Image 1 (cartoon, one colour):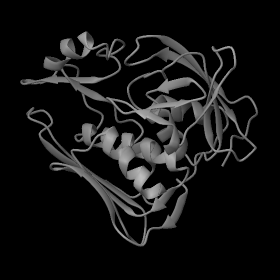
Image 2: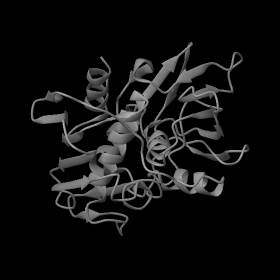
Image 3: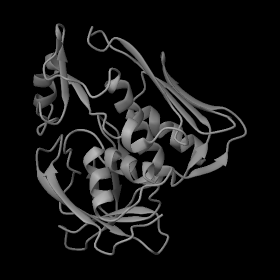
Amino acid sequence: MTFTKEKGFRISGVGLHSGTKTQVKVLPNYGNQGRYFIRVDLPEKPIIPATVATVNQTLLSTELMANGATVRTVEHLLAALIGSGVENACIEIDGPEVPLLDGSAKNWVDALVESGLNPSEMAVGTPIDEPVWVRDQDAFVAAIPAPEMRFSYGIDFPYEAIANQWISWNPKKEPFQELIAPARTFGFADQIEQLKQSGLIKGGTLDNALVCDRSGWLNPPLRFENEPARHKLLDLIGDLSLLGTIPQAHFLAYKASHKLHVQLAKALFS
């Protein structure tokens, strides 16, 4: 599916890690070239395809690199596109990081609708024949043959506000726009200073991320009781979108990360 209006849409905001304000313009791509970024702030306006082959690093977000340029924290925007049925899009950006906005994919989906898109189901690719999985100690992400697409994600954190929680979602029966897109990113108060000293989360605030400490959430209310698990599922969808079309499978993840998400995508691609 492509947009029904030529103009696409523009959104500006601050990047989670860089703290830099950038503007994104999402345009229809009628050349069937998939989803790709253009760094319009650089002289050569390099193109960065949103593919498994262009993944550069996965530390607390997914960063792509091609033609001497990078673009970071692409997962929420890419999840909004593939979750709304957009298979082809040209994404112009005037800086190195996609804006975090409210920490979810909701603002991206809302902008897609306002630009004239009637969201459809996520496209489903060819069914897989054999299980594929990657793990790191007790964390794992797997793709299991299944008669229809399903995603299940579990998390477990030593904070009472989150603890152990799960989400299982069927894109054919439950709308992405309502049940997954609004789930916001989350973090922990006792890690903020260390991450900032490492040059990360410079743009993080209580307005664009859920934050908890040992006693509970600092900025309630949550949009869903299991909003953190739903957000991890949102990240997984964004990372798997780098395959172009996500194959038909039951994707099962537990305590996973962008690194494991991308490793699974690479294993499926190969």
